[in-house]
Image 1 (cartoon, helix red, strand yellow):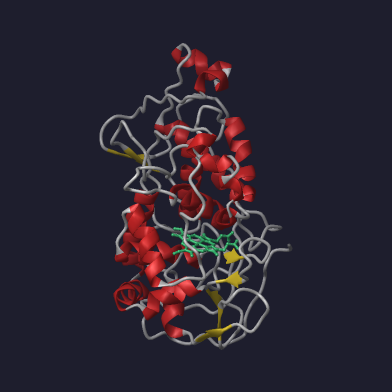
Image 2 (cartoon, helix red, strand yellow; image 1 turned 60 degrees about the vertical axis):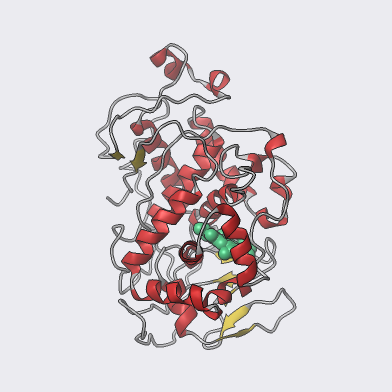
Length: 377
Ligand code: HEM
């Protein structure tokens, strides 16, 4: 599909819940602004080119480059082993450590940079693979069950049928295939670390907050695939949302914070059956999702597809029944209002919840987390 360059003519009205005005123009900018700042009052209307200058993606090169990557906690190295590692090691990497690769924070930053480089594509959706990569990280992790301690990002079991064919995962092959080139270039990284790191990169590159991340996931085999039905069903409402997210160990506030990722991307009729984007800036993470939920009038869309809402004034945006449940339910709504008023608060609480989501069920051996340098830093 050609890149979206839609501009709606409806006058921008000042929002009652805003710290910043809600933009009514479709924009597709990525890497738009520094992180953890207030939403930019005017979204960029053009896409910024992905400069490769900042990329240290040099294959297996081990030349130290001062990337300014933050490391939370002490120690710069993470001794990393992976079940798939010995077969996958390249000569240069193996020779560094005599057979066992010990990737450094710089190695992970190189993977980040290579993911960032891949995200923008004018011929795909709204100009970025970022949203579908975020959805991959979320669906890989959101299968976690705290009681049985099964599922979660460890294992990357979505590589295998039946999990890859679960209805909820429709369309995620696009993201998995996209990241295959990165896996080939950095064969030492596990798929499960790669998918979660890529989701972090996508959030940061789409103007979202920094998400501290740590490696340590190991790839599993088909026997670890989770049963169908662990991910949320968009046709349902608050009771279902609570059942699904409480099972992962999240609370009401975290459910609402995580749902703010629907500021990004769109629904596809050939994937979920639903259609359209949630916001006018589907390649930038902002609190617009919450503002729109509160400020727009929403009505059932009249069409032959699954039941979804459309905004009455432009009929160009959508909400799922599960999205609308966040304003119908009193407890959820409190948090929608908090985030609609304060983008920084949303970023902080989203970063906490999303970081935790990506770690569900992973038996980490190290506490240290990396904060990746964004390409716009
Ligand atoms: C609360 C329950 C949720 C439901 C019912 C739900 C449902 C959906 C559905 C039906 C789609 C459209 C898929 C397609 O047709 O391509 C979608 C897309 C998406 N979801 Fe969710 N989701 C939920 C929570 C989340 C969470 C927690 C995140 C991340 C933190 C997330 C991130 C995304 C993103 C980024 C997209 C856009 C993907 C793209 O543009 O290709 N969602 N979701």
